[in-house]
Length: 408
Image (cartoon, rainbow, N blue to C red; front, side):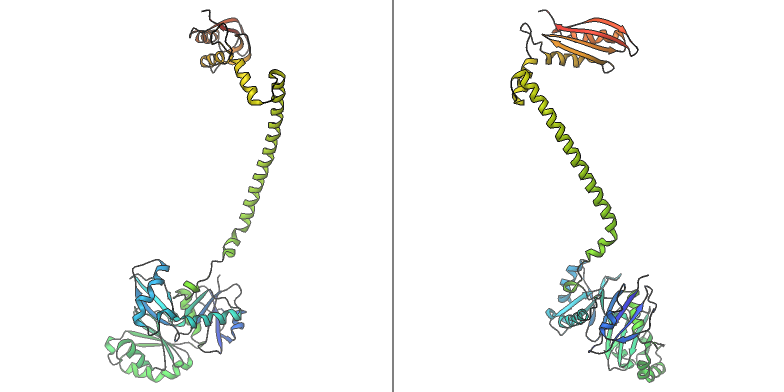
């Protein structure tokens, strides 16, 4: 089961807090405080989620038609520049997953602040897999406004709106900011308040007053602190990961390849063996080619007094195509006529050719097949084939034929 190390960075240098959660958001360790180096020591074999201050990051919502992540990041600064006081060129924009209505949650933070957070993590040896604004960890309660009170800070989420973070405001003031007046209690949805011990101590009287005003409000105490609750929300429902665009992590090719390392090694071994086998075969064929070439050169030297294979081939073709009594009755022509009349059921036992006469020894299925072969050769009028003998054997009829030039 994948474990998550959720590390919360303080707004100002000081205590870092962290907690370990399972893939269902259940706490596997108590919330711990210490240095960033102490937190980094717990990161082995765990997915690291870093939460940054909700007072230093701003959440908004945007409705844009584009779906390409790269194109979306390019358009966000221009679509939201009227909602921020900071120069958009100094801001980093991160988009979250698009909801069913096409709305895209967006988190904005100054590049200077983003660089500072990542530099602190790098110096401590902590490599975050995700970086979220802590306000994205506010739980989602369908049909209800959700608030998280931690000391004098209040994080909230209005149904259908982006999460927010406020400091130094009372609960009635938070409702007034979110809905335009706590006295209009009939227009307020049900409110679910999560609070740590300090947060509840500060807003306990406000809770009582709001209930007297008719506000439907439930309180859930987080005695272990708010971090496990924020982390559990982000494990189950990821928010806007700030590691996008110029801060996006480069693909870890090594981790992708590692599961396939054995299969790749086996495949490489098969390829090497195949190449080696082809190499051995090539060497054997090269040796046979060299032997055959030497034999041809010897035969050419003995019969044509030439070792040039091209000249030897031309001379052999000339000799095989010689005419007899002025007719085209060369060996090649005779062989061509025989091939056209050949029956695939017959078997050639022997062939000899001398001065225009070709003698054949053939095994045919029957005497009639042998006779048909003889007549087919003679049908063109240029050659005359005659059966010299036909003797039955175990395989068929062994016939001897002679092919000569027809008299003109």
